[in-house]
Length: 345
Image (cartoon, one colour):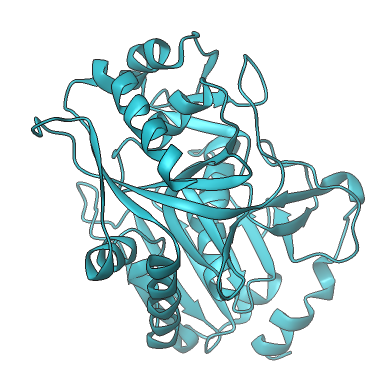
């Protein structure tokens, strides 16, 4: 059997699937052969967008000749032995992508973004593997299906989605959590999938969790007004906040994108924290710089992304948030955003 036909058919692994293992995330309906923690259960609906097999890899991968394996991407971040933290190969002349993390998590994604196989070693926990799946892997799946994803967290304000955009450690999750503690439902964390409706854009719900750094907890408790109940991740690096409990709310349905807030690097900005409007080329450049999987885009994907984000920057109000370096000012940052939202939403 040729690789292309194997990727399209893959009937050898079409089960077992059931409605009990169906989920909805980022606008995709997923069906898996095992439960996946942290993913919202989808209501009964016809059709499946993505099927996920856990603990296995496609059997036809072993039959791929070495010449049909091409390096697509290797991350600049490397361990002491020079091994990249993330490597992606193109297999079978483009029929499939293999995504391998240094800790032993292995993913195979067909080129249509409709089938995912997940394999992990003893060195990586199931929790970490699911985190890879819900973040980088599904961002690639969405890209393959034509959806642009922002590095952003989002909340709901008066039936519109408000996205906080920024690089790693910019404070996206912390800001969303602080505003969530003030009663605004949380829509998505770290990844915002943009549904293109032409002149408007829709943000689909992610998972009902916010992943926070321990250093943000004290400031969050003061800004939110309530002490959040947090669960340490197995690796101890982060704390998970379940936004279906402890006074928080999760927004389960998609909402139109109402505004974008670009988070600047923390510093002693004069007057910080403050919010200023930004538009034109500055807005577009900032959005392009904060998309997922940007380093693995081909020319066609990049052109589609640039065109869509150009329309987003024109149709949606974009603001720049200048946080203060002092985390104790998180509450004042929330005040500034809420005040600005009165003019935007």
